[in-house]
Length: 367
Image (tube, rainbow, N blue to C red; front, top):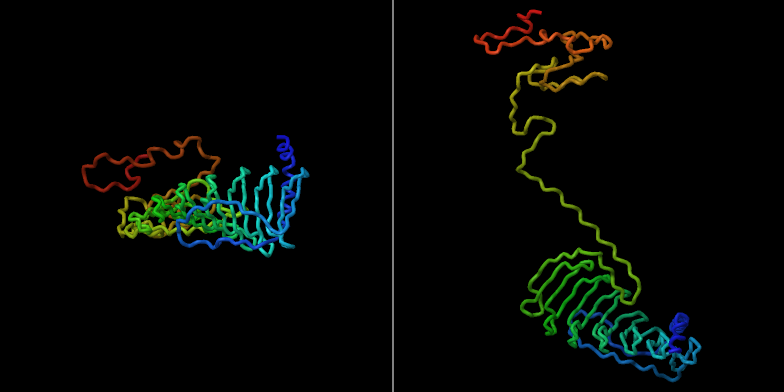
């Protein structure tokens, strides 16, 4: 207990020293399976994770915390570094084994991430960059998940989801985002369910109804809920989200050819019908048809009324009748005194018995 307590107090210092030693290791040749990204959907078997030994001509231990125990061990063949072992949490157990290629770059790794003494992952490298890794996700000491990388991004993932002993799901990625997913739900070694994704979002589902390995039915799905998916890193490198595609231009509105059209420069409907004119007094200077435009009122004067209505202000261009203007200061207080009521409009007979035309304006009226 005391020893573990002492180790925990210096773990940050130990990690820094180990990281420095790890970067200075050089190599040996390590056989490894192919790291090429598969293009088919094979129901590969899960594989056991067995710790590989780190042996060679000579070895050198490093005690990073001065407790008398080696926390890092380097193995070399002459002047070439073959492999190295690291106790990352200083508990006396090996947590990371790393082997190197002839050029000194990392070729293979095995790691115990949760420090329980059992391997959780083994990884394969090309030119010092992670290319493929195998993981035990259910802690049964069997690699059940296989991942292929394209640079820092994940490109392909295969997994035994049901602990059946063989891969039964396949995932294909583009720019770190899921683009396709296939599932073998009946464990016959062939996918029966196919999912299509765009920018990491599900857009389509296909099913193989006759179990021949080819999709038969297609269902369109639009998954737009939640935040946009983040690209998946293969080696832990932070990734930037791909730039979104430019939205498509909106379609022009449809034109209804059956709807009536109206001439914007004319108040007359397009059908050609002319509305009936009511009995009105025409403004001087306009024709009976009302086609001549109303004269423009001078600055400060009221504009002329619409064509075909009774004019309240004489036309400034053709004044046919003189208009008496009363000075503003002489206006009487009440409108009644301006014009006598009995002289404004003569009273028309209620029901004329004879078809005689009406008398001219002002005729027969007694002031």
